[in-house]
Length: 394
Image (cartoon, rainbow, N blue to C red):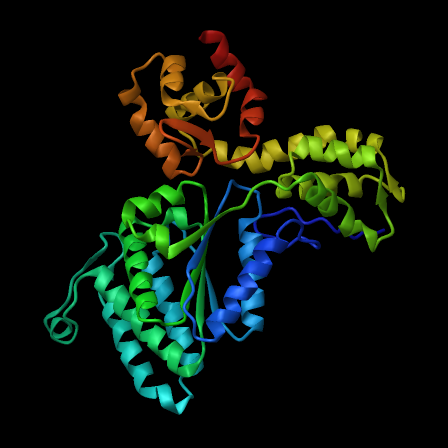
């Protein structure tokens, strides 16, 4: 017999009950209301580890913004897709939506020209423009920042005149190329200076703070930075118990306490653990013994899916670097301690460090300190036979 399961672990899947994000949602609702009144707002960047619910949060915010009449588009940055073509496509969609309004028809044509100038011959691989003689005559700019700024200011003016604010939701910002990120910041900055109702809500791994500040000094004033972390005890309890209430199922306090203790309040882990508990329990009251029964399956599921997919992207040198981090016994760990575990000088491990940061496996916490972007990743490494063999040889 089919048994509906109210828990939804997955990449960006909306849980049946979203716990712990009420304050963020209420704050953003107020900002959306201001944007509708043509009051330019600071853009918002959410950062956090894998599995804390950043994508879920910005998806919920997008739905709220759309309900208020704001033009919204979601962009997921990927290394294989260039951001410029995606932002240009989204801008064109906005112009199609408002083109029927008589008073902005001239602005729409102006904006379309700006978009064509941006994408007509932009090479995403080299981040360069190569204009033909005819194109060069019509489009004078060969600078990505200037071209993207022209697009943002022109669609911003159209948004202002048509009373249709714009909000771009950009996920996985850490994968943006340096040139693209710098151009986006500059374009958004100029648009805000002109008072146009355009904002960005972004999400990414913790390293995006440094990326933004390194690219433009004024980015600290341009964005509101919000950290998305694990849930508190009370929030975790709701994430566990609320989804099954409509199914007339209850948890004992001991069962809730153990789930929170094991998952450390990370939303994805809670969804995954509770899904296993619920599908393996037929009783209307979930006890501690039900939780303990599926504990091996929970770790196996995480190891074979959530953790393994990231670990297998690592080269041999990457893995040794990771092993050294885990062997430090305390996270975040210093680069000097990692070097000591590897028996190498600090500078010699810099390329591997940079590679792991670019892959989104680790991130710099403080000066010369590193941690994993995936919660409880060190526990997974410690369970690997490969790690145990490496430790024996040290």
